[in-house]
Image (cartoon, rainbow over the protein chains, first blue to last red):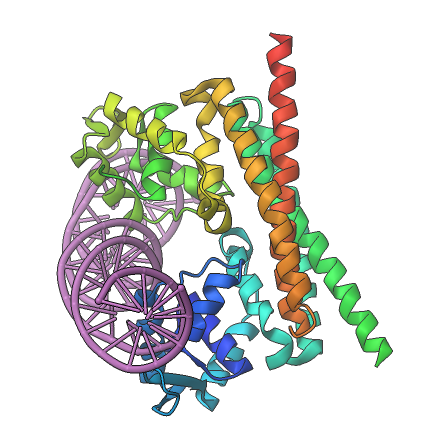
Length: 184
Length: 184
DNA sequence: TTGCGCATGTAACCAGTTACATGATTTC
DNA sequence: GAAATCATGTAACTGGTTACATGCGCAA
Protein backbone atom coordinates (compact mmCIF):
# COMPACT_ATOMS: atom_id res chain seq x y z
CA UNK A 1 0.00 0.00 0.00
CA UNK A 2 0.88 3.63 -0.55
CA UNK A 3 3.89 3.06 -2.75
CA UNK A 4 6.28 5.72 -3.95
CA UNK A 5 7.88 6.71 -7.16
CA UNK A 6 11.58 6.08 -7.65
CA UNK A 7 12.17 9.68 -6.68
CA UNK A 8 10.31 9.10 -3.43
CA UNK A 9 12.51 6.16 -2.54
CA UNK A 10 15.64 8.03 -3.53
CA UNK A 11 14.62 10.78 -1.12
CA UNK A 12 13.94 8.28 1.66
CA UNK A 13 17.34 6.72 1.07
CA UNK A 14 19.05 10.08 1.19
CA UNK A 15 17.13 11.20 4.26
CA UNK A 16 18.05 7.99 5.99
CA UNK A 17 21.67 9.15 5.89
CA UNK A 18 20.72 12.36 7.63
CA UNK A 19 18.23 15.25 7.58
CA UNK A 20 18.22 17.45 4.49
CA UNK A 21 16.34 20.45 3.18
CA UNK A 22 14.81 20.51 -0.27
CA UNK A 23 17.65 22.67 -1.41
CA UNK A 24 20.21 20.21 -0.04
CA UNK A 25 18.52 17.50 -2.07
CA UNK A 26 18.64 19.71 -5.12
CA UNK A 27 22.38 20.08 -4.67
CA UNK A 28 22.84 16.34 -4.30
CA UNK A 29 20.93 15.65 -7.49
CA UNK A 30 22.74 18.40 -9.34
CA UNK A 31 26.19 17.21 -8.33
CA UNK A 32 25.76 13.48 -8.09
CA UNK A 33 26.24 12.32 -11.62
CA UNK A 34 24.39 9.03 -11.49
CA UNK A 35 20.77 7.99 -11.41
CA UNK A 36 19.46 10.95 -13.34
CA UNK A 37 17.04 12.56 -10.96
CA UNK A 38 16.03 16.04 -11.89
CA UNK A 39 17.20 18.80 -9.60
CA UNK A 40 14.23 21.01 -10.45
CA UNK A 41 12.24 22.35 -7.51
CA UNK A 42 9.03 21.35 -9.28
CA UNK A 43 10.02 17.73 -8.78
CA UNK A 44 11.68 17.81 -5.39
CA UNK A 45 9.36 19.92 -3.22
CA UNK A 46 6.12 18.21 -4.22
CA UNK A 47 7.77 14.83 -3.72
CA UNK A 48 8.90 15.78 -0.21
CA UNK A 49 5.42 17.04 0.60
CA UNK A 50 3.87 13.80 -0.59
CA UNK A 51 6.23 11.84 1.64
CA UNK A 52 5.26 14.02 4.57
CA UNK A 53 1.56 13.48 3.90
CA UNK A 54 2.18 9.75 3.88
CA UNK A 55 3.97 10.05 7.19
CA UNK A 56 7.28 8.84 5.79
CA UNK A 57 9.17 12.05 6.60
CA UNK A 58 8.68 15.00 8.90
CA UNK A 59 9.99 18.52 8.60
CA UNK A 60 10.89 21.38 10.88
CA UNK A 61 11.47 24.94 9.90
CA UNK A 62 14.79 26.42 10.95
CA UNK A 63 14.27 30.15 11.34
CA UNK A 64 17.64 30.74 12.89
CA UNK A 65 20.25 30.65 10.19
CA UNK A 66 20.18 34.23 9.02
CA UNK A 67 19.27 33.32 5.47
CA UNK A 68 15.80 32.52 4.33
CA UNK A 69 14.02 29.92 6.40
CA UNK A 70 14.94 26.30 5.68
CA UNK A 71 12.60 23.35 6.00
CA UNK A 72 14.64 20.38 7.07
CA UNK A 73 13.24 16.91 6.50
CA UNK A 74 14.04 13.74 8.37
CA UNK A 75 12.83 10.20 7.85
CA UNK A 76 10.31 8.58 10.22
CA UNK A 77 10.08 4.99 11.40
CA UNK A 78 7.29 4.43 8.88
CA UNK A 79 9.43 5.93 6.16
CA UNK A 80 12.30 3.62 6.97
CA UNK A 81 9.94 0.66 7.02
CA UNK A 82 8.61 1.64 3.60
CA UNK A 83 12.14 1.98 2.25
CA UNK A 84 13.14 -1.42 3.59
CA UNK A 85 10.00 -3.07 2.25
CA UNK A 86 10.78 -1.74 -1.20
CA UNK A 87 14.39 -2.88 -1.02
CA UNK A 88 13.34 -6.33 0.20
CA UNK A 89 10.92 -7.07 -2.60
CA UNK A 90 11.96 -10.17 -4.55
CA UNK A 91 13.57 -9.44 -7.89
CA UNK A 92 11.16 -10.41 -10.65
CA UNK A 93 12.02 -10.95 -14.29
CA UNK A 94 10.43 -7.69 -15.31
CA UNK A 95 12.69 -5.77 -12.93
CA UNK A 96 15.70 -7.12 -14.77
CA UNK A 97 14.23 -6.52 -18.23
CA UNK A 98 12.83 -3.04 -17.78
CA UNK A 99 13.87 -1.65 -14.43
CA UNK A 100 17.59 -2.16 -14.02
CA UNK A 101 17.92 1.39 -12.73
CA UNK A 102 15.40 0.75 -9.99
CA UNK A 103 17.32 -2.34 -8.88
CA UNK A 104 20.52 -0.33 -8.65
CA UNK A 105 18.73 2.33 -6.62
CA UNK A 106 17.33 -0.32 -4.29
CA UNK A 107 20.86 -1.48 -3.73
CA UNK A 108 22.47 1.94 -3.38
CA UNK A 109 21.30 2.46 0.22
CA UNK A 110 20.93 -1.15 1.17
CA UNK A 111 23.85 -1.90 3.45
CA UNK A 112 22.82 0.95 5.73
CA UNK A 113 19.23 -0.21 5.99
CA UNK A 114 19.34 -3.99 5.70
CA UNK A 115 22.96 -4.78 6.43
CA UNK A 116 25.66 -6.61 4.58
CA UNK A 117 24.11 -10.08 4.60
CA UNK A 118 20.93 -8.86 2.93
CA UNK A 119 22.92 -6.83 0.46
CA UNK A 120 24.89 -9.92 -0.44
CA UNK A 121 21.70 -11.88 -0.87
CA UNK A 122 20.36 -9.17 -3.13
CA UNK A 123 23.47 -9.21 -5.28
CA UNK A 124 23.36 -12.98 -5.59
CA UNK A 125 19.72 -12.89 -6.61
CA UNK A 126 20.47 -10.13 -9.08
CA UNK A 127 23.40 -12.04 -10.57
CA UNK A 128 21.33 -15.20 -10.85
CA UNK A 129 18.56 -13.40 -12.73
CA UNK A 130 21.05 -11.76 -15.05
CA UNK A 131 22.76 -15.09 -15.74
CA UNK A 132 19.45 -16.47 -16.89
CA UNK A 133 18.42 -13.45 -18.89
CA UNK A 134 21.58 -12.70 -20.86
CA UNK A 135 21.52 -15.94 -22.90
CA UNK A 136 17.99 -15.15 -24.06
CA UNK A 137 19.23 -11.79 -25.30
CA UNK A 138 21.95 -13.48 -27.29
CA UNK A 139 19.43 -15.89 -28.77
CA UNK A 140 17.18 -13.00 -29.70
CA UNK A 141 20.05 -11.19 -31.38
CA UNK A 142 21.29 -14.25 -33.24
CA UNK A 143 17.82 -15.06 -34.50
CA UNK A 144 17.22 -11.56 -35.85
CA UNK A 145 20.66 -10.18 -36.65
CA UNK A 146 20.37 -10.99 -40.36
CA UNK A 147 17.24 -8.99 -41.02
CA UNK A 148 18.10 -6.07 -38.76
CA UNK A 149 19.72 -2.86 -39.96
CA UNK A 150 23.27 -2.40 -38.76
CA UNK A 151 22.57 0.43 -36.35
CA UNK A 152 19.67 -1.48 -34.83
CA UNK A 153 21.86 -4.50 -34.31
CA UNK A 154 24.59 -2.39 -32.76
CA UNK A 155 22.10 -0.71 -30.44
CA UNK A 156 20.90 -4.12 -29.34
CA UNK A 157 24.46 -5.23 -28.72
CA UNK A 158 24.97 -2.15 -26.62
CA UNK A 159 22.01 -3.18 -24.50
CA UNK A 160 23.38 -6.68 -24.08
CA UNK A 161 26.74 -5.31 -23.06
CA UNK A 162 25.03 -3.28 -20.38
CA UNK A 163 23.56 -6.43 -18.87
CA UNK A 164 26.90 -8.20 -19.06
CA UNK A 165 28.57 -5.27 -17.36
CA UNK A 166 26.01 -5.36 -14.55
CA UNK A 167 26.59 -9.08 -14.09
CA UNK A 168 30.34 -8.64 -13.81
CA UNK A 169 29.73 -5.76 -11.40
CA UNK A 170 27.40 -7.85 -9.24
CA UNK A 171 29.89 -10.72 -9.08
CA UNK A 172 32.80 -8.51 -8.20
CA UNK A 173 30.67 -6.71 -5.60
CA UNK A 174 29.83 -10.06 -4.02
CA UNK A 175 33.52 -10.84 -3.75
CA UNK A 176 34.12 -7.40 -2.29
CA UNK A 177 31.56 -7.90 0.48
CA UNK A 178 32.79 -11.38 1.23
CA UNK A 179 36.33 -10.15 1.70
CA UNK A 180 35.06 -7.43 4.03
CA UNK A 181 33.12 -9.98 6.04
CA UNK A 182 36.15 -12.19 6.53
CA UNK A 183 38.34 -9.26 7.54
CA UNK A 184 35.89 -8.48 10.34
CA UNK B 1 8.56 22.64 -32.76
CA UNK B 2 6.01 20.03 -31.80
CA UNK B 3 8.44 17.58 -30.30
CA UNK B 4 7.66 14.04 -29.30
CA UNK B 5 8.27 11.83 -26.36
CA UNK B 6 10.81 9.05 -26.67
CA UNK B 7 7.95 6.69 -27.34
CA UNK B 8 6.83 8.89 -30.23
CA UNK B 9 10.27 8.77 -31.81
CA UNK B 10 10.54 5.04 -31.25
CA UNK B 11 7.26 4.63 -33.12
CA UNK B 12 8.45 6.85 -35.97
CA UNK B 13 11.64 4.81 -36.21
CA UNK B 14 9.73 1.57 -36.29
CA UNK B 15 7.20 2.87 -38.79
CA UNK B 16 10.01 4.05 -41.01
CA UNK B 17 10.98 0.39 -41.47
CA UNK B 18 7.48 -0.41 -42.64
CA UNK B 19 3.78 0.07 -41.83
CA UNK B 20 2.56 -1.45 -38.59
CA UNK B 21 -0.66 -1.66 -36.63
CA UNK B 22 -0.85 -0.77 -32.97
CA UNK B 23 -0.93 -4.43 -32.16
CA UNK B 24 2.18 -5.06 -34.24
CA UNK B 25 3.94 -2.39 -32.22
CA UNK B 26 2.74 -4.01 -29.05
CA UNK B 27 4.30 -7.29 -30.15
CA UNK B 28 7.57 -5.59 -30.99
CA UNK B 29 7.75 -3.93 -27.57
CA UNK B 30 6.76 -7.14 -25.82
CA UNK B 31 9.34 -9.27 -27.59
CA UNK B 32 12.18 -6.84 -28.15
CA UNK B 33 14.05 -6.96 -24.90
CA UNK B 34 15.80 -3.61 -25.02
CA UNK B 35 14.75 -0.02 -24.53
CA UNK B 36 11.98 -0.75 -22.08
CA UNK B 37 8.93 0.64 -23.78
CA UNK B 38 5.68 -0.51 -22.32
CA UNK B 39 3.58 -2.78 -24.48
CA UNK B 40 0.36 -1.59 -22.87
CA UNK B 41 -2.35 -0.37 -25.23
CA UNK B 42 -2.87 2.66 -23.01
CA UNK B 43 0.56 3.87 -24.05
CA UNK B 44 0.71 2.79 -27.68
CA UNK B 45 -2.66 3.79 -29.13
CA UNK B 46 -2.75 7.31 -27.71
CA UNK B 47 0.83 7.85 -28.88
CA UNK B 48 -0.04 6.73 -32.42
CA UNK B 49 -3.07 9.03 -32.40
CA UNK B 50 -0.96 11.96 -31.30
CA UNK B 51 1.47 11.30 -34.13
CA UNK B 52 -1.42 11.21 -36.58
CA UNK B 53 -2.79 14.51 -35.28
CA UNK B 54 0.65 16.04 -35.77
CA UNK B 55 0.70 14.72 -39.32
CA UNK B 56 3.72 12.48 -38.68
CA UNK B 57 1.91 9.25 -39.48
CA UNK B 58 -1.24 8.27 -41.34
CA UNK B 59 -3.43 5.22 -40.92
CA UNK B 60 -5.75 3.11 -43.03
CA UNK B 61 -8.22 0.56 -41.81
CA UNK B 62 -7.88 -2.89 -43.30
CA UNK B 63 -11.31 -4.47 -43.17
CA UNK B 64 -10.33 -7.49 -45.23
CA UNK B 65 -8.38 -9.86 -43.08
CA UNK B 66 -11.18 -11.92 -41.57
CA UNK B 67 -10.26 -11.05 -38.01
CA UNK B 68 -11.17 -7.81 -36.37
CA UNK B 69 -10.32 -4.67 -38.36
CA UNK B 70 -6.72 -3.48 -38.20
CA UNK B 71 -5.56 0.12 -38.37
CA UNK B 72 -2.23 0.17 -40.11
CA UNK B 73 0.02 3.19 -39.66
CA UNK B 74 2.70 4.46 -41.97
CA UNK B 75 5.09 7.34 -41.60
CA UNK B 76 4.67 10.56 -43.61
CA UNK B 77 7.30 12.86 -45.09
CA UNK B 78 6.80 15.21 -42.15
CA UNK B 79 7.19 12.34 -39.75
CA UNK B 80 10.46 11.30 -41.32
CA UNK B 81 11.66 14.89 -41.24
CA UNK B 82 10.82 15.10 -37.55
CA UNK B 83 12.64 11.84 -36.86
CA UNK B 84 15.72 13.01 -38.72
CA UNK B 85 15.70 16.39 -36.98
CA UNK B 86 15.67 14.65 -33.61
CA UNK B 87 18.47 12.29 -34.60
CA UNK B 88 20.55 15.17 -35.94
CA UNK B 89 20.46 17.30 -32.83
CA UNK B 90 23.93 17.92 -31.46
CA UNK B 91 24.82 15.84 -28.43
CA UNK B 92 24.87 18.07 -25.37
CA UNK B 93 26.47 17.27 -22.03
CA UNK B 94 23.14 16.71 -20.38
CA UNK B 95 22.25 14.04 -22.94
CA UNK B 96 25.30 12.08 -21.86
CA UNK B 97 24.70 12.59 -18.15
CA UNK B 98 20.98 11.91 -17.97
CA UNK B 99 19.74 10.64 -21.29
CA UNK B 100 22.01 7.86 -22.46
CA UNK B 101 18.99 5.80 -23.39
CA UNK B 102 17.70 8.53 -25.65
CA UNK B 103 21.04 8.73 -27.43
CA UNK B 104 21.00 4.99 -28.04
CA UNK B 105 17.48 5.25 -29.41
CA UNK B 106 18.49 8.11 -31.70
CA UNK B 107 21.20 5.86 -33.05
CA UNK B 108 19.12 2.70 -33.33
CA UNK B 109 17.40 3.75 -36.55
CA UNK B 110 20.02 6.11 -37.79
CA UNK B 111 21.73 4.34 -40.64
CA UNK B 112 18.39 3.88 -42.37
CA UNK B 113 17.43 7.52 -42.07
CA UNK B 114 20.68 9.46 -42.22
CA UNK B 115 23.10 6.95 -43.70
CA UNK B 116 26.38 5.50 -42.60
CA UNK B 117 28.44 8.70 -42.67
CA UNK B 118 26.09 10.51 -40.33
CA UNK B 119 25.91 7.49 -38.07
CA UNK B 120 29.68 7.44 -37.89
CA UNK B 121 29.75 11.13 -37.08
CA UNK B 122 27.22 10.54 -34.32
CA UNK B 123 29.28 7.73 -32.83
CA UNK B 124 32.41 9.84 -32.90
CA UNK B 125 30.64 12.72 -31.20
CA UNK B 126 29.21 10.34 -28.63
CA UNK B 127 32.60 8.79 -27.94
CA UNK B 128 34.21 12.20 -27.60
CA UNK B 129 31.63 13.33 -25.05
CA UNK B 130 32.01 10.12 -23.08
CA UNK B 131 35.79 10.44 -23.08
CA UNK B 132 35.44 13.84 -21.49
CA UNK B 133 32.77 12.83 -19.01
CA UNK B 134 34.18 9.59 -17.62
CA UNK B 135 37.21 11.20 -15.94
CA UNK B 136 34.93 13.60 -14.06
CA UNK B 137 33.02 10.59 -12.74
CA UNK B 138 36.24 9.05 -11.49
CA UNK B 139 37.21 12.29 -9.82
CA UNK B 140 33.80 12.50 -8.16
CA UNK B 141 34.11 8.94 -6.90
CA UNK B 142 37.66 9.39 -5.65
CA UNK B 143 36.77 12.58 -3.83
CA UNK B 144 33.79 11.04 -2.04
CA UNK B 145 34.59 7.33 -1.76
CA UNK B 146 35.83 7.62 1.81
CA UNK B 147 32.68 9.08 3.29
CA UNK B 148 30.25 7.00 1.22
CA UNK B 149 28.65 3.77 2.42
CA UNK B 150 29.90 0.70 0.61
CA UNK B 151 26.71 0.00 -1.32
CA UNK B 152 26.50 3.60 -2.44
CA UNK B 153 30.07 3.48 -3.70
CA UNK B 154 29.44 0.23 -5.48
CA UNK B 155 26.29 1.62 -7.12
CA UNK B 156 28.29 4.60 -8.31
CA UNK B 157 30.95 2.30 -9.71
CA UNK B 158 28.25 0.42 -11.53
CA UNK B 159 27.17 3.66 -13.16
CA UNK B 160 30.70 4.48 -14.20
CA UNK B 161 31.13 1.04 -15.68
CA UNK B 162 28.05 1.63 -17.76
CA UNK B 163 29.60 4.73 -19.29
CA UNK B 164 32.85 2.90 -19.92
CA UNK B 165 30.97 0.09 -21.59
CA UNK B 166 29.18 2.56 -23.87
CA UNK B 167 32.47 4.15 -24.80
CA UNK B 168 34.01 0.81 -25.74
CA UNK B 169 30.86 0.03 -27.69
CA UNK B 170 30.97 3.31 -29.56
CA UNK B 171 34.61 2.81 -30.50
CA UNK B 172 34.13 -0.72 -31.69
CA UNK B 173 31.03 0.36 -33.63
CA UNK B 174 33.06 3.03 -35.35
CA UNK B 175 35.58 0.42 -36.41
CA UNK B 176 32.74 -1.80 -37.58
CA UNK B 177 31.30 0.88 -39.86
CA UNK B 178 34.71 1.82 -41.18
CA UNK B 179 35.40 -1.75 -42.18
CA UNK B 180 32.04 -1.92 -43.92
CA UNK B 181 32.78 1.28 -45.79
CA UNK B 182 36.09 0.00 -47.10
CA UNK B 183 34.58 -3.31 -48.20
CA UNK B 184 32.15 -1.35 -50.38
C1' DT C 1 -19.23 -23.01 -24.24
C1' DT C 2 -15.26 -21.56 -22.34
C1' DG C 3 -11.21 -19.56 -23.16
C1' DC C 4 -7.49 -17.84 -25.80
C1' DG C 5 -5.15 -14.90 -29.29
C1' DC C 6 -5.97 -11.08 -32.20
C1' DA C 7 -7.12 -6.16 -32.09
C1' DT C 8 -8.55 -1.55 -30.59
C1' DG C 9 -9.72 1.60 -27.59
C1' DT C 10 -11.00 4.86 -23.20
C1' DA C 11 -10.68 7.08 -18.61
C1' DA C 12 -8.98 8.13 -14.04
C1' DC C 13 -5.04 8.98 -11.87
C1' DC C 14 -0.46 10.51 -10.93
C1' DA C 15 4.12 12.34 -11.31
C1' DG C 16 7.54 14.92 -13.69
C1' DT C 17 8.71 19.07 -16.76
C1' DT C 18 8.81 23.78 -17.52
C1' DA C 19 8.22 28.14 -16.28
C1' DC C 20 7.14 31.42 -13.19
C1' DA C 21 7.10 33.87 -8.57
C1' DT C 22 9.04 35.27 -4.28
C1' DG C 23 12.27 36.72 -0.90
C1' DA C 24 16.65 37.09 1.99
C1' DT C 25 21.64 37.74 2.12
C1' DT C 26 26.15 38.37 0.36
C1' DT C 27 29.52 40.10 -3.05
C1' DC C 28 31.12 43.27 -6.48
C1' DG D 1 22.18 48.71 -6.72
C1' DA D 2 22.93 44.67 -9.65
C1' DA D 3 23.89 40.06 -9.72
C1' DA D 4 24.62 35.74 -7.69
C1' DT D 5 23.44 32.33 -4.34
C1' DC D 6 20.52 30.50 -1.01
C1' DA D 7 15.82 28.78 -0.50
C1' DT D 8 10.95 27.59 -1.20
C1' DG D 9 7.12 27.17 -3.61
C1' DT D 10 2.99 26.93 -7.34
C1' DA D 11 0.47 25.98 -11.70
C1' DA D 12 -0.34 24.43 -16.36
C1' DC D 13 0.71 20.91 -19.20
C1' DT D 14 1.83 16.37 -20.74
C1' DG D 15 2.37 11.62 -21.02
C1' DG D 16 2.56 7.08 -19.00
C1' DT D 17 0.29 3.54 -15.85
C1' DT D 18 -3.42 0.79 -14.63
C1' DA D 19 -7.55 -1.00 -15.29
C1' DC D 20 -11.43 -1.57 -17.74
C1' DA D 21 -14.39 -2.39 -22.01
C1' DT D 22 -15.33 -4.30 -26.45
C1' DG D 23 -15.50 -7.53 -30.15
C1' DC D 24 -14.03 -11.20 -33.66
C1' DG D 25 -12.65 -16.02 -34.82
C1' DC D 26 -10.98 -20.42 -33.64
C1' DA D 27 -9.95 -24.58 -31.09
C1' DA D 28 -10.51 -27.80 -27.17
